Image 1 (cartoon, rainbow, N blue to C red):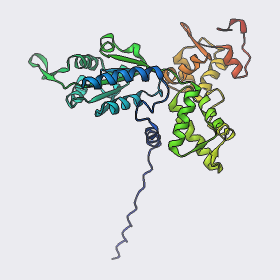
Image 2: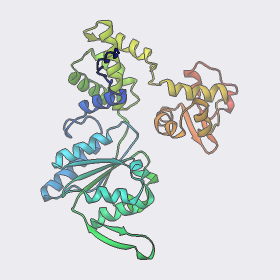
Image 3: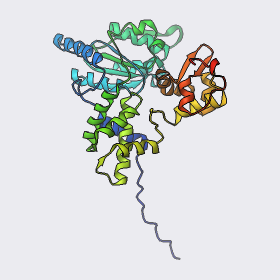
Length: 347
């Protein structure tokens, strides 16, 4: 009886996830110290004083709250604070802590001087928020053992540590928690000049050569956000590599950004989808955020945190009590004629 030949082993190569590649690329471009950090001059000066004073006293830094839109460097600043203070960094996020027990487990594992970074801290569960602000002030937590009448509270003393919280919505933090932070940094959108410096530094780290015009072209279309600038830089260098260019020209950068649907004002596919829906389907508004989100196939939170801040800041839309309204600038940018110019908000 013939036995079938054994199939040879096949080694499987699993390609890395694209998000992991992007995160690794971003991590490689992060500055490691306040001196390397570009932009946010007021925050850098203030934070330098806070950290220098803490080092002088030989104590962990005071708790820090970082407030600002996504992509402005909140996570990077948390890593810099840990590095400047010589502290171990523990990272977590608000959505990952669903119960007070989750937070108690994290806090009980902290060592003296550790830095705990909580991204999206406004999304912490309420019970976890209450435990956190007690831990931040008194450096202790009460662990509840058992349930019902037989439950026992066991106090647990914690070593001195530093909490760095990051949020895009500081107004959603309860006042008792917000007041426990000794220093609050408000991060602003970057100027084109600062973004051009960011692009130049990142290009040097990536080994890419850019003409000054190319760096300026990327900076102008980066929506005031370093994370976007670095992402566009990688796409532009990809384009130049495929085209066989050793040095990225302004024309090549412009062509690459047009290919990836980023227009001259920095508007991307999502921005234009929102603006076109407002003008073509809803007559310029007012239209509710949830209605817009359903129309363009995105989550309302995505529109509110990713697209809307830039569109409002640059005068494309305004927020009213009745909903979002397109301005004359939007109609002009889309080359559309408003139905009733005199009735438009901001006309």
